Image 1 (cartoon, rainbow, N blue to C red):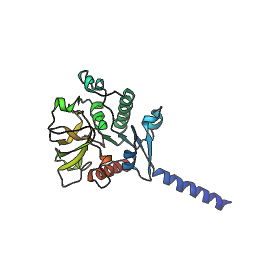
Image 2: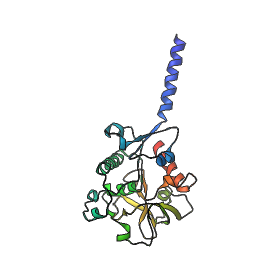
Image 3: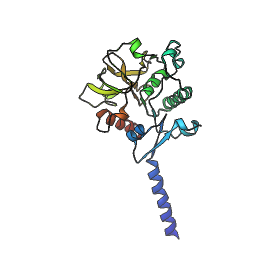
Image 4: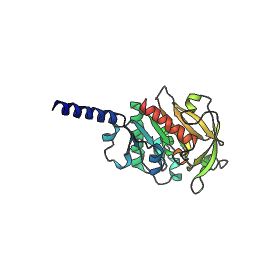
Length: 245
């Protein structure tokens, strides 16, 4: 009987050890591409967009991804002129993602922002957005054309620690995908821009580590760049390192 008890307790201990390696990532709005980008046998995904009580899952978060999507309501950054150039506003998503960002910021939870997610990181930190890039900046660089396009971006920071959280080393120019008509305008004080497109638009950003240990964001879509792409791999690796360490 004692042997059975010891075996049972040993099994429970091993099971608890295995479970302790599991990490929970909350996506603001999940899709197949994001899950395939980050999936791992030790990762549990939660789709915040389909869960009514967000408070019930926040305490489980080991990492958060703010995903791409609709235009952010300009009233979120105290702008009324941009409303006329926005698409349909998703008020509940704005509220949800600001809540996710605030929780990650206050509790030092690793966070990745993609496209709209990078814009939300800036807005929630006190920054603003361009309402429509072709109108306000011009068409030197095409950021969308009835769908996704490709264009080059260049590093604008020489700080290898920050740039290597997103980009592979030993390169300063990268070809990325693009599907947006809004972008970062006034940059929040605690955000560092580390890459721009050739029209000057911010394409990659890092939260100053004095404010948060790991918040990175890009205006493009690493989850759609393919598993062999260096940025796709580098962001995934950096995010996992932040979650597990």
